[in-house]
Length: 489
Image (cartoon, rainbow, N blue to C red; front, side, top):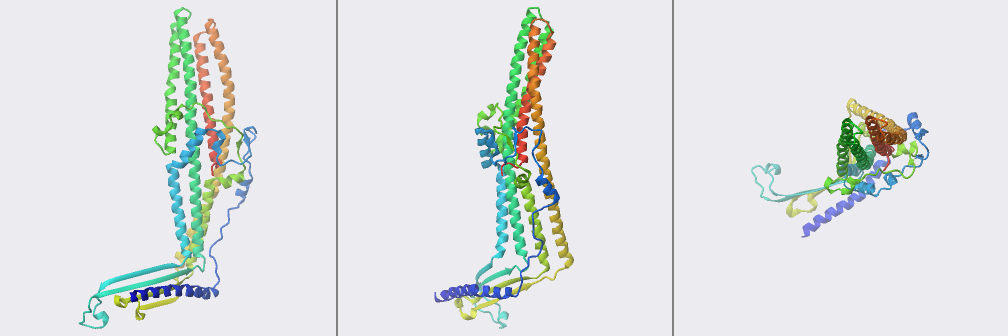
């Protein structure tokens, strides 16, 4: 027990010595050295193209101010529809969506990698203990023809090392790792934005299909009434059998338009299940019965272009990846210079019965200067490769900005044009409704043929279906615009 205590005390003394000696040695060494960080310092891109993009306007004169505002886009934009069902579905999607879960694990992996890189700033400890039974060879003991007795031996050691970041290689590596972790966070936000938008779109698709089904069913009921009236007129001798055939054909034509709408409704239901991470049979049945399209209760907020460029996750992701690749240039450049590691080591080896004795202990203290005299062609090639990678990331960043502007303006243009189309369709439906009523009245009095009635009712049904389809398209365009604006995070 006394020998074991001696061994323990020797290690405690070693650690205490290390705590005292290493800072002193580091201070002495670094006092005569000047720190410098190799490589370019990163600055956020600021080019004429980006400045012009940031100062451009998102507003358009084609859309009335009652439907569009320059207010900041809220993070939870889906609440603007004031639909408790939509709110519930999006909550479920944010909790259980599998793409989002994958992105979260990718983020956690990136953050763990960043911690690993940051640990290079800390001293490294290596402790080992190796007991073993046996004997060395006689020759190793300089005693030929001698076989030492078998006994227990041990070999233990403690190594402490600290790399001096003289040229900023570790600093640049940490900068790059932190930027990549922030890019992973932006990628996670991008998945959230898309999951929210796709969930809202799938739900509105189900509701839009429900509205269209309801409209077609109304047209079918009206056409069946018209067919019964025609049959009565045929029986009374006031219409020909051909009119009856045409009336029934129109009923069949309208009925044939229902299956595609039912399929569209069901497909939206399936998409909702996948987005919320569940099976279709577990979704509330009331979702299938949705036959009312959500509407915005206030003007659509657009914000300004500068907010857009700072809000969109894909732009933030590309900007952070550019920062990471810029820092990697410094990491590559530091390979041109030597590396200095401060080290302290203590060891003890010998027979187990002599563990901790004075003659079994050893220690060393001093810097390790390592410099692989660079093959300048190889190192310079790596530096050029990292510079080229940073250049490519810069081009990708600018392209992402331009794509963002294109997506916003395309979405806004689609929204504006569809809104104008919907207004025209409303006027068309009103006119065709009037024409169909007058044609039916004239047909009842024998003033026109049934072909005129059939044409008026067919065009009315087509116009009514086009109007409700336009309403669904308008909802989809709104969601596309929210997505392009980077709404959510």
